[in-house]
Image 1 (cartoon, rainbow, N blue to C red):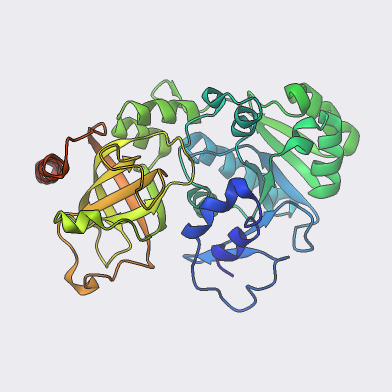
Image 2: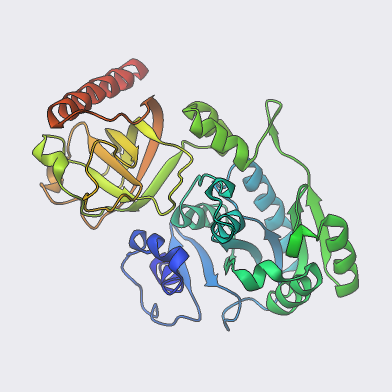
Length: 369
């Protein structure tokens, strides 16, 4: 099965709904069975479940828990350790993650948007990255009022033991869980000893003396330090998704764009970037992209004020034809930030601004050769 089947499990959840357009791969046989949700990519397979009340969920596992926003190098090191422990125990490796992010939930509950973290990646990108790290199974647990109110002991009993059959649990050095964040590593270690599963903690992962964390990635992206973000992530920062129809204003201005929706309202990066586009043809295509809310457009924009990644290819692949990109799943690498989003006074000024961005992006790529 493909990852599109996994995301259909989230379709009824309003907070996850906007991730769905990025997951419309052609389904393989058997994809209509919602209880064994999985996908395959590049000969790597990972089962994906919404919650753990499915017959396809492994009866035992080696588990790690976290939000895994960005799946940075610290996460990657943790997942490598998890795979080794899973192999020693003869059980699958499993990631337990949450959607929405718990801080998103509390920001909405208390009507304090400042509590919500900027989002590094989409759910599609998170699942893709976890699969590429060799994870056998990911359980996406909806973070709601019921989960927020669970005591640490009930979380251990209901989720870790009865729900997932954890034999081994690996957490980060700052891990907290349960209502009021009352559970910590010492509590989990004692609970594991009582319930019969091993507990381990991984210390901070550092690169050149810098602690690798989602917060550090967010800070680098917010400041436009794309090379620093790439060092923390272990790869260029990228956003993938399904090319969707937009207002088609770009083509009337002479700059056709590929539109990807960014599900979260608060992306970690924003602005104008020199990019590489993968998935349009055999070779990556150079481009310039706008990630944000397009302040020069009117409120009646067809995308309703959503965050979009709009990418203009500097040289459009002729083999695609004028409409050949729609329906494709592409990956856009944001390599260099040119500037923040700007508000232009009219379409003539906007056109001139886009033309200058294209010239600057071409110059940046030329300087790299």
